[in-house]
Image 1: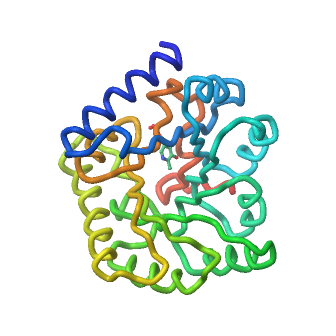
Image 2 (image 1 turned 90 degrees about the vertical axis):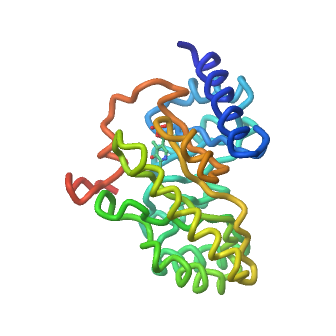
Length: 246
Ligand SMILES: *Cc1c(COP(=O)(O)O)cnc(C)c1O
């Protein structure tokens, strides 16, 4: 299947899920998850009309950004962000999906103050507990948002989560419901400067479920570009594998 055909199918599925959720297709924002995908194939997808690129690793992203920076594209950072990569991530990313701790907030703020600007962020919530060590716990998310909101360099635009990796649909759905619950609480809290505009949830295997549960930003890789050769453990350091190569 070509990138073009894959994109057509993904867009149809998004439209269908959006309708089920009482939304319009254009209410759902597609971010292409482009880890391991080379610059020329990303360019092909841009030619097919998609403009949001989500990368997981800062150095890999910077290399592709050098090649593609004249393309009409918006770069998102969706992977785990180490504090020592803050300066580099800000060279390309206009939205960071993975802000999950105050130490990172402080580092981002320092650098952004120095550059005299701001960046859009999402707070990453760990809705599957045992499976991942990244993301703030759901019960601590409101507190982290409140603390982060004090930094005007960081524009909080919503929340992000990675659903549980399982074939059990109900367990996946539960993750998304947790994120939607935190989102609803934050809307009620109405914290100054915080916009709960995006719920970034859903990947190739579960984006329809995520949209049904209220997600409006999906991050899709495999369903557009095909299977990756590099194991995801390389991108998602987990307690189980112990892989964390920065
Ligand atoms: C790779 C990745 C995705 C997309 O995964 P696919 O299953 O290939 O669609 C989404 N979000 C994050 C954070 C990723 O690392």
